Length: 67
Image 1 (spheres, helix red, strand yellow):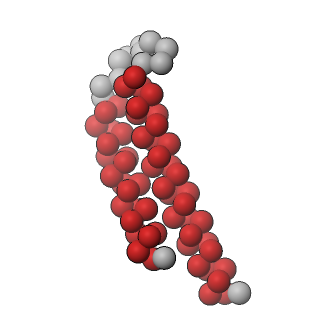
Image 2: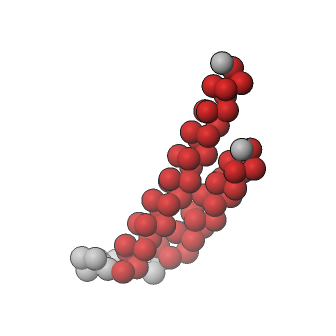
């Protein structure tokens, strides 16, 4: 489980780097449903969900060890 948490943390960092790279390509005033903007938002969401999953796995481990 610890390896999975570490992988999720790595994915979160990689996705955040990707988001920063592509966010520079989003037009200043993007059209509705601009593909690059949607991609950047989706990448940010994926990074956030990796963080959330890792946080909850850590919580589950703490509960198991403590309980």
